[in-house]
Length: 471
Image 1 (cartoon, rainbow, N blue to C red):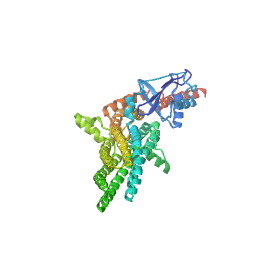
Image 2 (cartoon, helix red, strand yellow; image 1 turned 120 degrees about the horizontal axis):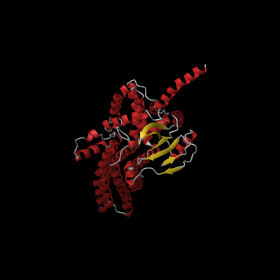
Image 3 (cartoon, helix red, strand yellow; image 1 turned 180 degrees about the vertical axis):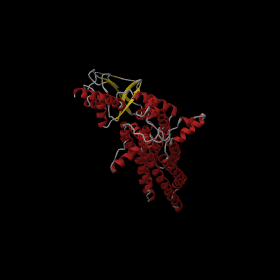
Image 4 (cartoon, one colour; image 1 turned 120 degrees about the vertical axis):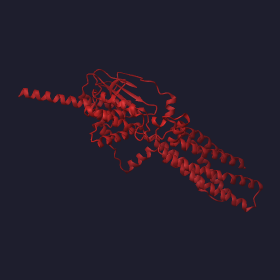
């Protein structure tokens, strides 16, 4: 949404852009009459409110990018408080850019939809496990609590991941902050003083013990889910082994009807399947939790045929591999469920098998979505393209402060660092070209520290001259 303001405001318009990923940033265009000193005061006020601000060239114009605001309305309120606009209501608003298509939204939210399907399936399995254990005790006089524990572990893994994802907020802001910290350190290694803005953005946020726990919780939603599933798989394998021994002992004891003997024989055949599916689930969960995701760089793709590129994509995404493993487990679940259904001698037992069948159906759909999902973090993994633009502009501010003879070497050095798979990934040539453009733009951007400092230096001699004339 683009907000336009009256002629007596320092800002002519604010363009709030929301990405398909859910991240958002605002771009402020200053009025021609606004001085660097006035804009510096506005920027300082926004930074004091916790916003991230970055001068940059965008769409051919010099602007100030703002991040970490909750909504367009809250940003406008802060701009009014800072004296940047004369009224809290814009003169007019207009929709800017193309609306986000359903396909763009879908591509960025497969993991959330996957969690939605999983929680329904997990609820069904939890209900199945609770009822199945009650009947198991009535039939055999023994308890196998691990079967119930597996349902709890499935449910808690998904539920905790849902809460973690919901609390995480705009991940692109955190990515800008983390990458800025690396760039700040690189400048420090070269004994170059970063711009005040880069230093501020790179500052580590301090947290107490509770804050650190919360930060870890919201940073790794997929890892939390996969660890829960790994535990569920272990419980399933243990439960199946225990049940196998109980079924065998019951059949060997004799004094049972032919129908019960037939039922036990079918159940005994199905238990090894449950042991395998439990171990497969545990292995998939541990891989999905512990394997770090890595963005595929353009260099990785070079010279690869279509099959090699597919394999590259598959192996660089831990959730894809985990989903394949879970899919195998779910198919085995389906066979075991079918065996339970066939072996069931009452409508109640068939109903309970149907609950497990619901778990199978929802899980297969969820795993299809997980296969194309990203963890949202890792080597070179970015929420969206705005992260790269922000980081490049932040880096350009510091490079522009150096003498012209040093700038090109720094552009080469910093573009190589940013293009590293461990930092941001991408093509170094393209990033270097964007850095050059932003370095030149920031020198004339009235929002920048550089222009404000130059104006202040130019004003000092004039003030001294006036003072001498008065004396």
